Image (cartoon, rainbow, N blue to C red; front, side, top):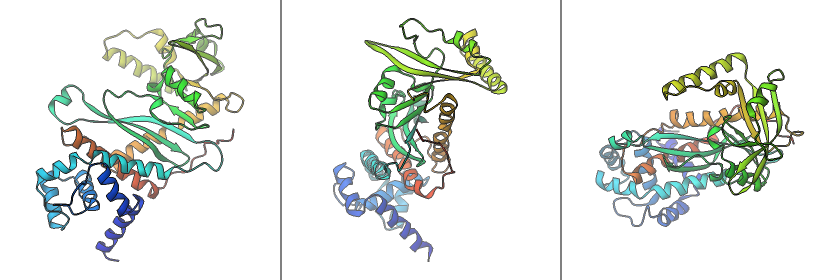
Length: 364
């Protein structure tokens, strides 16, 4: 098999994954990316051109020259830019096609959905001055080891559990940034369960009688046991307190000391005095969950939470393997196309990446 025939076979396989030429053509027209054939003959040629520019490390002029030499399209760099600005919604649609096609029902056990976000900086001096970012909000499913939800916002888009749709029986696992009572309640009301890490000041903690709960005192009392596992209520605005379960697991001595050192550095950087409560809580991993204590004891909750590293590794692959970085354009529409083209590629490659064996013991 020649190099050229291999490339053509891979490209045909890519088009098939995206639904075939007819579906790609229809979606390009529906999303305003390809309305008439002028310099670019068809939507599949446009898709190839978009991927070549966004992933090939070429500038607009180089991409235009490459397209002409390859017999793909004869258009100027300005015409290419205009095309790119119209492709954001189309790239989003194609990525959504891969996300929905990959979802399959579980043969047994429960689906774990790891939630996290990653960012890339915006281009331009003004954006850098104002710490402008593009933020990707994602869900990464186990045991499939694949992205199942992706939403793109700017830096104003905060981390929230209720961005992601959940099905009954799902288990959502997230870090500190997702500790918000209302989204937590929303997920539980849908019949899904949650495991969310929280800072010790992350909520207004209550006892069953609605009186304040002293978390630090409880941690101190559990020092010898090394585990705190008890019911907890979280105050909400204009709604009854949310009944959950508090699970705190004491860190090993070295990890605890490292966490305290990091807390001191953060306080020093912000010019603030560190509190004794922050130092005490730094020695613990504090989690809230809706999972039943009999089916999921405290050590099992800790094991499930530690699976979060899977989505962090997925982000590393996205940035190192696919090369997602700051978009070269300051124009929001072009930047959106750039980022979504990278997301489309990681979704195309997911079936070909071999995930390590996992044993999340999902019987419950």
